Image (tube, each protein chain N blue to C red):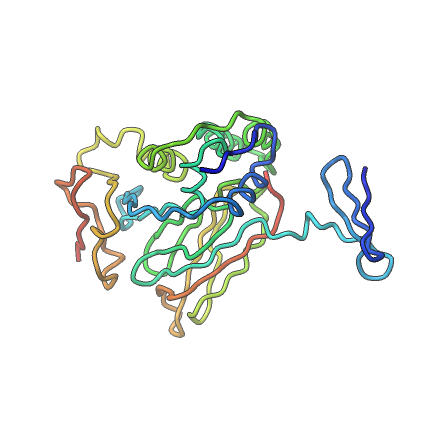
Length: 127
Length: 162
C-alpha cells in the first residue's frame, strides 16, 4: 500500500489496485469506481462517424436511430451505467451485454430517428 | 513511429489510455455491411478511429480469441460477472501490428456475430461485405430497407431495397 498526500488530500493506492482519496468530511472516495470507463462522441446522421472516443472498437449502425457501440475492454458485467444525450428528444438504452450496448434516439413523435450529435459515457466495472 | 511499451500484464484499459495519449486516430475509409437476421435490415460496422490506431501500432490488443472466450463465459447459464479478464485480456501476450485489412478482419471476428462470418462464403446470398464508406447509399431516407445486393461479391455496393 502506498500513500500520497497533496495539500491535505490523501491518495491511497492499495495492492489490489484500488485508489481512494479523502472525500467530503472524513469519508474516502473510491476513485477507480468513479472513473468513466468509456466515452464516445459522434454523429449518427447522414452516416455514422465517431468524433472521438475511448475504449471502443467499433460502432454499428443498426437501423434508423439505432447504434451499437462495442467495447475494446469488455465491462465486467452487464449492469453498467451508460447515460447518453443527443440532439433528439430522448434516447434509450435498449439492451446491453458486457461487450456492447444499444442506443436508440427518438423524436417528439417517439419515432426512431437519426441524431446529428450524440454522446455517451459508461461507468461500471471492467472485465 | 513511437515504440509500444512492453504491455503484457498491463490492464488493457491502461494500454488504451496510453494509446489515446500517444497515437494519432486512424479513420478507416472501410466499413463492414452485414445481415445477421433475414427479418432485419443490413447493419453497418464502422471501425473506431482510436481502436484502429491501436491495431496498426501493435503490442496493445489481445488476440481476438480472448473475446470469444469472454463471450462463451457470458453465455454460460448463471453468468454474473467476468472472472477471466486478467487471464484473457490483460496477461495474454498482445498481438503484433496489423495492416488495415487485417485489422478489419480482426474486428469482424470480434464485433460481428460468429454465424455471419464463419460460413459467409457458403450461403445462398452474401451476408457480409467489406466496402468503402463512399459506397454506402448517400441518403438514409430508406435506411430500414437496406439489404446487401444478391450479386455482391465483396467489392460492390449495397442497395436500398425500398
